[in-house]
Length: 287
Image (cartoon, rainbow, N blue to C red; front, side, top):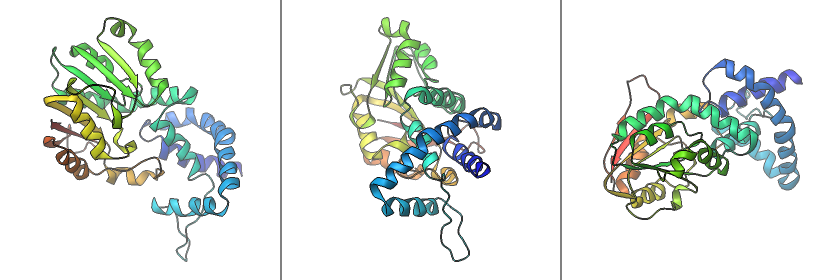
């Protein structure tokens, strides 16, 4: 039983944390933490859902893995694995909205893994000292030092109160000087007036949006004319291998992102990558 739990938790770790972690050493360190979360949180959540929804929930656990490439038996029926859904789902929710002690750990891991994509997105913004920049979903804040150093002012919006509080503490001097402003919020209702920013970026967030059109329309509202937007993400074809829970992650193809940008009025959207081997994309467009 212990062996099966550890193996299934290995799947959970590599599936749910792929966006935040990219080494086996990290897994070795995280395995005890993840096992603790599994025993204290995930199993308790499973029991609650089974009590509340009964057979409907058990069918959900059987069907959803099939949509993400679960093993099938000889008759084609899905092979149910107890932890294959709920453990990645807990971690996926932390990636979408970090909270508590585990959320702070997720923030650190996101910084490590997302650093290169964020740096490339910042470069594609083509910042000047007069720019007013917005970052949506800044998470652990890996891009914020570069944005604050190069722009006139920086605002950040994040779903997570934990990440907002961390950013306010970490960049307290810039906040006090009026050069940085961090607020809790969502892309569907940005807490800023029309034309407030000249540049905007968001990295590894569009999987969690309810609607690409609504999110991009709201970003366009707060951008000044000819404002520049950079969107970093891992495309659908890569993320399909991760068996991420569909009620948390919505996978996005580059062509879908570009089509949504055009529908709401962005111009000249294009895909940028450092080289052809880079798995992630940064889409740049003008308002």
